[in-house]
Image (cartoon, rainbow, N blue to C red; front, side, top):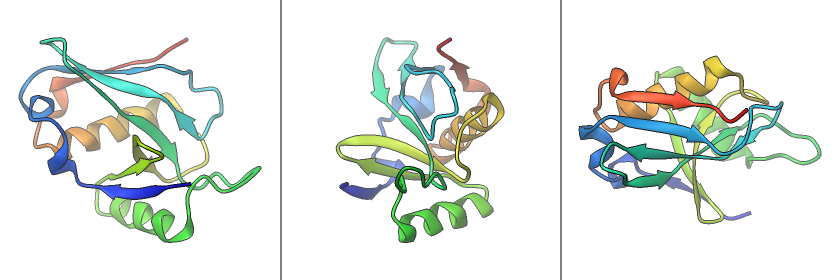
Length: 126
């Protein structure tokens, strides 16, 4: 697994300046990894997955140093972004996602780009 930290300043500017919807491409079905993307009001898009860093079965989804860093960022009200095998992911503590946690991750991504949370909407696949 190729995993690297990703700086929120490298995200596109439109994420911080226009209304954005994060749309899941997969459902929240007890999975540690939820695929999705941001879509802006101008039609631009940017892939962003959600990753629950504590999931360890059948194998760990995140190496230990990155898992600890994700927990530390979370404790400070932030979210850590990773590029994993070429895909961008926002990391959260836990082993799976529910609607509340997914919304909180998106809220923290909004904060990381300096956008008000009310500019972001979340839409889940069923």
